[in-house]
Amino acid sequence: MSTAPATAPAPERPLPIPTRESQPHWDGMREGRFMLQHCSGCGKVRHYPRPVCPHCFSMESAFKEAPTGGAIHTWTVCHHPFNFFFKAAAPYIVALVDMDAGVRVNAQLRGISEADLKIGKRVRLGFEPVNKEVTLPFFVSD
Image: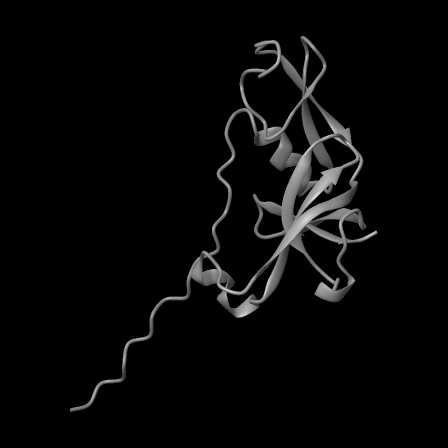
């Protein structure tokens, strides 16, 4: 009697788990809007969202829509992904971007070859729906 070899389950994509503080940010992503937390005490942006302002220690905040443009600060080409889910996509580029809104965001960079990358290159944030609850950011050439 022969049995077919068991196949391993496909690796799952790691997804963020929104918190009470970050939920408006992720809701905005799902709606195609880049929502950033602003301190109600001193007005500074808190990114990634958190309960207490690191500048004035206020616990009050409001989310405001921010522009989606930015400039590449740095990048890395991932040949050996940290998670097996991304293995099929390797090599891929992850960029750290200085957003026009005054924060840095890291996300995958799409549609730009490694040869065309340079610090300061303009990019814009895109939105990738993953499921009903989660939409993830990525960058494309501006």
